[in-house]
Length: 168
Image (cartoon, rainbow, N blue to C red; front, side):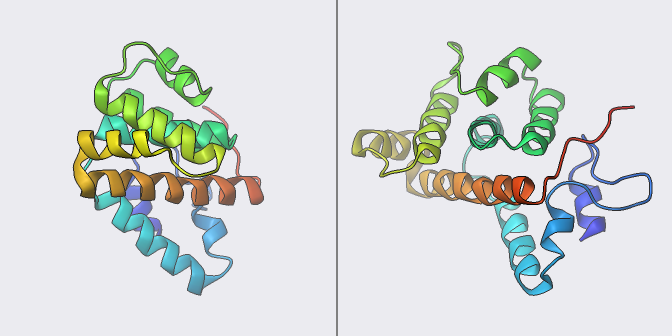
């Protein structure tokens, strides 16, 4: 698991100086059977690419922000800025639940779907249909699963009090 984490997530701190994993990874090792299932899901969600990366990051940041998962916001804020060119102000706005005015259609749908799902309740038909129009059936389904997966990540981070690492 450690090698996989280090290889895939090089844009932010994933290990401590003593080599221990940061993020949700250590928490998932408390129960190896469940943790390995979550690791498999993590790999699947990382490899799924039916929606654009920027829209994915918007959905993740909305989810992490709504659930107040500091490490999730830290990690995906780093991905959004370093790899996808989002400004820090944009990342902060999205994670705070404020929709920037300059989102493209894909990012806007990702924002609205994540924001609505994380509040709880049924996704309104009009928004469901819009997600289908923008991403297609497989892409919309991936977006719904992505939000659910990052709810799992956020809850894990919060349950085990996994914090943002000290910055050098």
